[in-house]
Image (tube, rainbow, N blue to C red; front, top):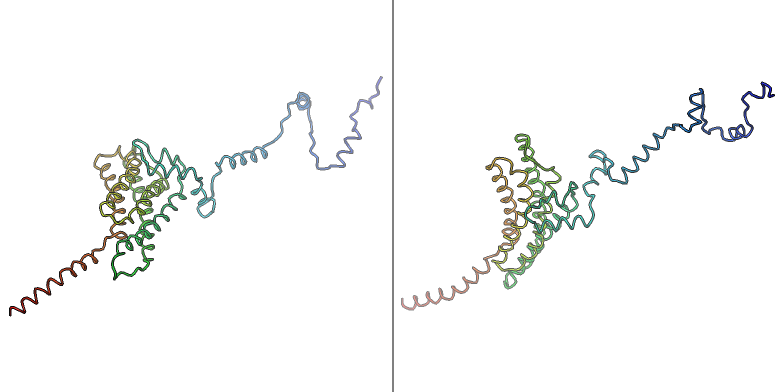
Length: 306
């Protein structure tokens, strides 16, 4: 029969050696029989809150759902350029081939507006208009012996001011107007300011190839290209902003669309009249040279009769 000393709890030497070798090891303390029963049944709860937080943070980083910092941080502005080449090309394709019933924001932007495409489109348009206008002036005056070519670098500055002011101020005005109408008429939908800027930026792409084709000094072709570019680019704006204003009053809806299209057409016409103006100086001087001999001959005949 076992003695009472044999039934007492005894500390095993192996466990003692392990604890002495690794004092920081975690231990499990069972203070009551119910906890012992739970431990024996395998129902042991372990606090994994730190691991779950780390896993959640990692999943947010992988899924791109981690919130950006304030506007003073680099990550805040990095989100505006979070697009790849295929997305930019798809949006450019949608801006030059507008289809009826396809909203540019819903079918191409898809809640991911960017500033990468609009920024480089505006920069390219600035140099395209300025350089093409310079080439147009050179080609139109090539036969004039009194003309001496001089690069017009001031046109780059004028084009940059015009394009970037239009690409920022007009969307700001449209966004502000739609936001105001939303506060007045609750059933009117709208877009964010970044979505509005994105739509206007991509709608300017069609003017880049148009400005290059304007170097062809054919008068009727120049205006035909303007009409085509205005129809394509204006169609993108109409099909994008019409769903946002169609539930408003008829007068307000149509007046808004007329202002949007008119401003867009005014930009194209301004490009044509300033950067690609047809000079009539050489033609008038040529007519004057033709009329001068006739005038001198008439004067000589009058002198002989006197």
